Length: 424
Image (cartoon, rainbow, N blue to C red; front, side):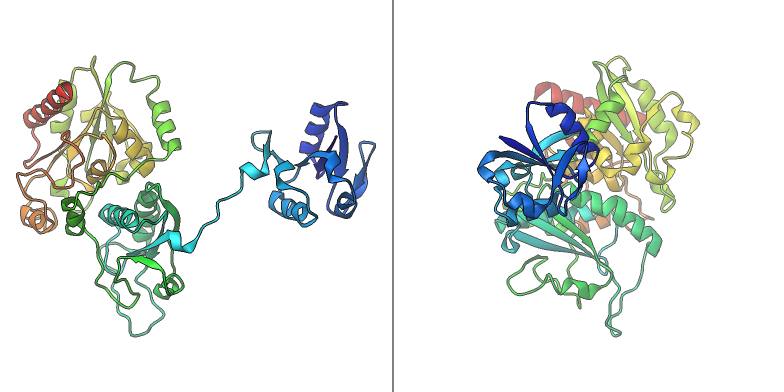
């Protein structure tokens, strides 16, 4: 039986060396070539004239695997006997085992996150969760997320850039919105559009969309906390964020020589420039970390993204911090998932563990009356009732403490988590 090596390069040389004299080798390129290492080189037309029953396999030694596979199929060679040399891992793979799945448009839910009515913050998680629940309800296999800008081709359209600058919005799209969409396993695509009218191709007849009333000429389809409450009342699970495997590997690698037999306790700080009264008080959190039994628990600090490359405050001398978790959202969620518990002052990322399986947290929510988005009245409007657990929590080890954190209160809440876990 013959083995065809299709292409001439370093991979061909490796195959020739490994096969030695045990194989009858035929060299082929699409257009043919001069003799190579003393062997004749056929072209595709010559290959087509051979008896395929006498060819055990064709190994593609080229980066142009798709093109060459298509050429082989065009001459009637069966794909079950077509292989390619993986030039990254230096292994031979069967093409039939690596074919990309066919996607049917009817299997896709198209979800439109509209920056004309939504802000590029961690509130996007409520949109992502709602879209995933809708996907399941509509029995779709995939979600294609569209990030829709305020910009339009229509001169009569009005959309004001608020809160964040265009550059900051772009950063947030790349580092908050897109990673959250990628943590939905059903995500098949994420498209960040240049202008609103680019949505029209996806809004063709028969397309399933979310929100159901989305239109590029409307502003009224924001999805926030109240919009997910009906799903909870109907008994639908909101656990749908899953960090990517590479992020988990990076977390395990970071902890491998530090954690040992101890439990991981992740402390997330808020250190943001806006509404500074909401920021974490370093001395309070440093005292909590010092009070932990370091033989049983390993505290790891996750700083605010915008502070992650600056030196640690002196209060946290000798505390382990993990800057990568501040910058890479998948790594942050993988760390939260790994932790015995996560603990911190209310901040954007604090909402993420609610939607990650078996993840624990304690979040402190004071009543900042001078912060319009963080007082208890704004919480009530968002269906989060002060002094009650949030309706969307994923398990009993997720606690909201409606008070400002003090070292004593932090430790008391931490002990409650320990008690919960010891009896579960």
